[in-house]
Amino acid sequence: MTHVAAEKQKLLNRLKRLRGQIDALERAVEADVECARVLQQATACRGALEGFIVEVIEDHIREHMVDPALPSADPRAQAAEELVAILRSYLR
Image: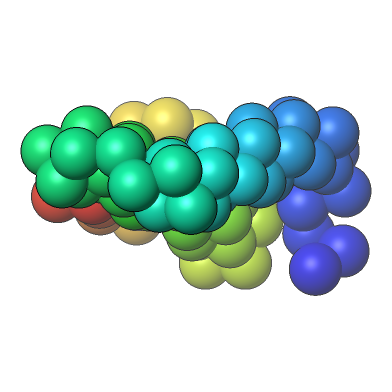
């Protein structure tokens, strides 16, 4: 994953938050917290993981699929940005 080196700390921070959410979810299950609260926490964990996935895919698209030297008006650059926008709306 060398293509995400510049974003490495941001991704690591996301994973640390996700780990904290999963730990909280585990504690909730162990403590027999009501189902609705457990499901709410599980949904938050899923959202955090999907956010992480979107970031990695977005970095991959921008690093490997589009030449960074292309002007933003180039159709390929525009198509890549449209794809990123679709991913963000679908996975978040």
